[in-house]
Length: 87
Image (cartoon, rainbow, N blue to C red; front, side, top):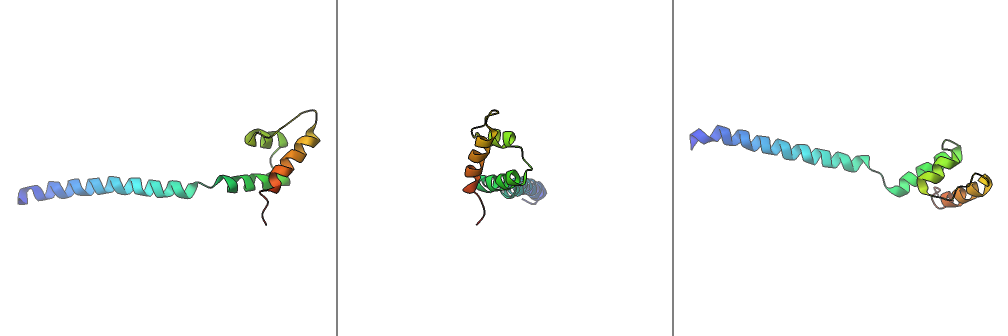
C-alpha cells in the first residue's frame, strides 16, 4: 500500500489542478459578461454623446435606417433609447 501512495497523490493533485483551472475560468467568464440591457444603455449613452454614428447604431440593433430620411432614423433611435435611459 505504501508503494502506491506517491503516484496516487500526484494523480489526485493533477486532477484537482485541472478542476480548479476550469472553475477559475468559469468564474472569470461570468465576470466578463454583462447583460444586454446594460450594453444597450451604454450604447445609447454613447449614441447620445455622438460617439457612435447613427448608421452603426441602427445596424447593431437592427433599427430602421434610411439614407434619405436621417431625421426620421434619429427619432426612431431616440425613442429606442428612451426606454434604456438611466433614472
